[in-house]
Image (cartoon, rainbow, N blue to C red):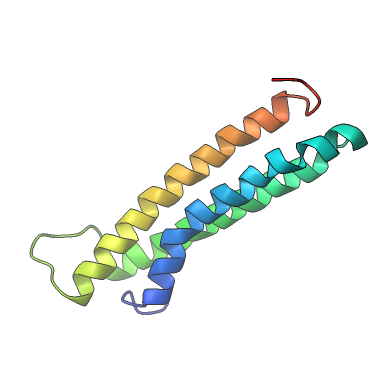
Length: 117
């Protein structure tokens, strides 16, 4: 396992959730083409890709969080404080964005892309 203070791992874990969420939003852009082709597989694929990105960032955040020693402590300072804070924020954000993407997937599952809103 990499060192917990690896900035690339910390920032990748922190940004994976929002990036996955934005990728999953691409399903709304593909809805008109799914309506004309009567296939929702591309919508499901894009939402699944976004979920995989967010979940991968959450797993990376969990690994970094464990390597950093857990939750931030007021006595922490320097590299350890940064690693604990960013890994905790990445873990919480990854869980939040993964849940949002699953909620978005429910709309793709239940609604037909040709329905007017």
